[in-house]
Image (cartoon, rainbow, N blue to C red; front, side, top):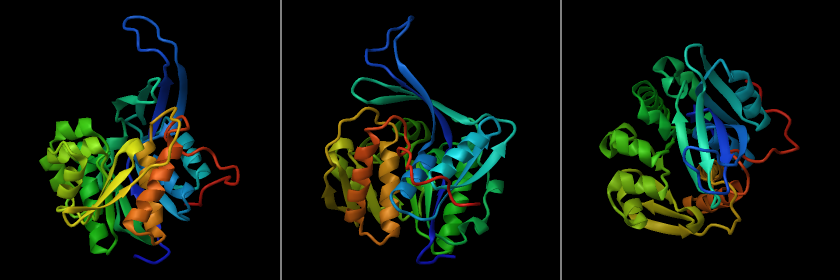
Length: 309
């Protein structure tokens, strides 16, 4: 199944984002002026789009969406040169996230997981790994029983096929609800873990990101902890092996910056980059991501559609 020119398959969430940028603090019980846009999003789908933007020639995304917005999401993915493998759910609406973005570009999410976490083992098949050189699992899948079972099944099949698997823990808040031990057990066998600093702390109990990265790299062969504007840490074999700086950027919206890092990092790894060089590519994409509204790359005028399914 694996080949040198293989694809990146992302299994994860496809979400409708409602991004509300407010320049003044929220005023309880009354109005707060905001700029509001409805955009395609989702950690898994965003990462797939950034991977394609970063030069990966064959990117696919498997996710579950409601029939309400399925056509719109398929068009958006194709326009980003990503092949959509979307399961349509007639009983649940597409996942929706309200992102409240303040004047510092920091975001707070209100999340309705909708159809996204209803991804079931019946939506997966080993045939989805045909031609795939890397599998990436969005951590949101691990926060509900059905999608967690699906993620575990995909991870097991990928390992059996010799396809390396990466996991993005996705949410420090949801990790706290699930419990670090349950997440670590469910994601065991992944080759690469891509947490941000808060997620790394939640998974290890270490306040220091370097200690957290080193500790996690005793469980996973490669761990890359993102630090926002401070860059990223690469850890292998129980030690931090590289510290990567991030380019300077003037942020307007930090939504999707971690997804951009993930997509560019995975594209670089598929192209043969070592972990430190791949982390540099991820940091460049993250710095670009905070300068645009929403979690996707700005449209590429040279791309009219994604690959045919």
